[in-house]
Image (cartoon, rainbow, N blue to C red; front, side, top):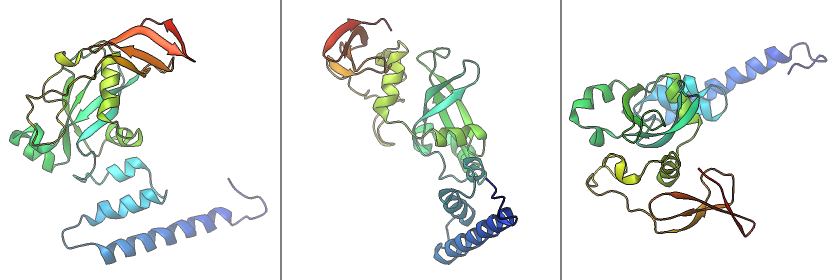
Length: 215
């Protein structure tokens, strides 16, 4: 917002921002190691200082962007954010090495359209989609599982390589399901919803009272 009492406000703010940029760039150059990605480190600090957008940060295409884990990915066809698994190179396999070196990441997107197997594809970390995934923040595995369960899928129907907790873990060992009990309602419509050990039920609780709420 401009200040009518200060006709030089915009010019002064631009000068201040440029000074911050130069200071950040000089500090990164001074402290970076010989094998560090200077462009990425500089833009990461500029992003932290609020001087560039997430999209500009992703324009570096750094392999450090979009690390292995769970995210939210916007699916335009259904106008929803859906849980998405980003795989490490070790999980994606050696055939993906060239694409990984070029800044692509192997992902599986789960939605009501794609079903329990998900929609697998590569995503360029320089894209707006990748920037949006970062801005939405990463999900915990439990939160992602809850969303997928809310879609009506059972864990047993999902590919075995989706819930690997480390690159060296065996993909043949699925994450064990929690036992029956009350858990925070994944729909957020009530305080708690009953999990029967396999799926979410219609039984919910609010302020100590139980109700029926079909999913």
